[in-house]
Image (cartoon, rainbow, N blue to C red; front, side):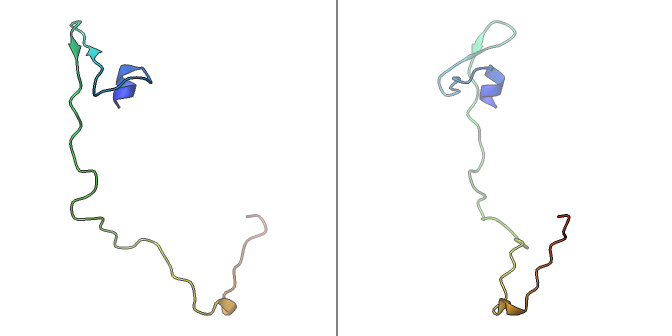
Length: 66
């Protein structure tokens, strides 16, 4: 977001300043928060389906217009 606010790709929010509407140079506060969830990810259904032990009976049907 800092690069978008500054309008410059070389903007470094840890060292560079922005000029506010009063003409004052200000620095952005460092973002806060957790890099990862403190109690891990809670995924009830990840969507993974294990393959059949014997796949010889599995029939995959793909429509001709797919």
